[in-house]
Amino acid sequence: MEAKTFLYLGIALGFIAGVILTVVIMRIRSLFVSSEVRRLRQEKKVLEKRLQEKNRHIDEMMGHAEKLAQDFERRRLEKGDH
Image 1 (cartoon, rainbow, N blue to C red):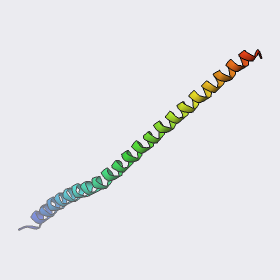
Image 2: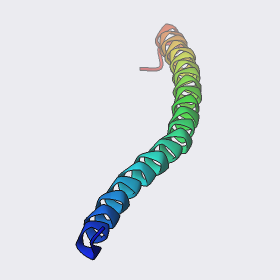
Image 3: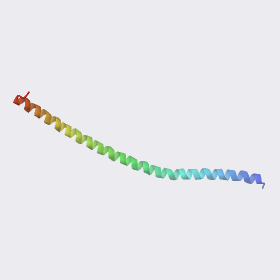
Image 4: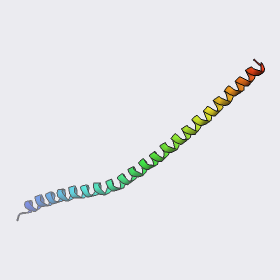
């Protein structure tokens, strides 16, 4: 075989090896990225749940405060302290 044939064969094999190595590395990276994404989604879900619980608690406290304010206003009017 001629040297030119070996050159082209080497270039072709190098290209194929590069493509295969790139695909393998991308697959391995995607495994780690997907686990990171999964972890972040779970964390987001937990934080959203905590936020909903806090909002519910705040709404409850606001309801109590409004009721107390109405009771106070009603008592003030009953006593005649306009």
